[in-house]
Length: 79
Image (cartoon, rainbow, N blue to C red; front, side, top):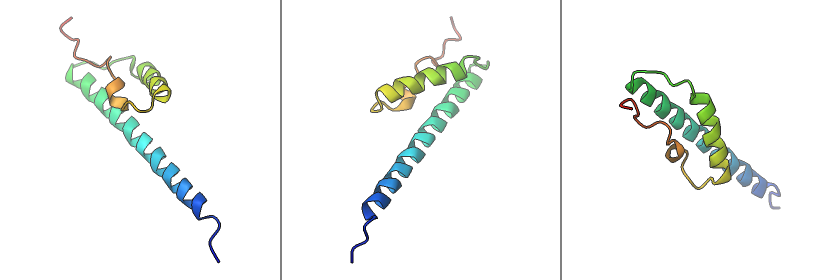
């Protein structure tokens, strides 16, 4: 007799992998942003606000890697 919930088990496992991948991607974005702010010698006050905007943009088009959306963390200390 076949196990009837095998498809659901696979779907749940793949969903869990996707969730872990999204968390790791978010963590890499935070580490990148904090590293950039320390490299320029100042802590950026708009980190949380900007991160929220980037997450919204990522959910609209999830094919774009999240760290590519971080355009506000360029080295603008010479301005």
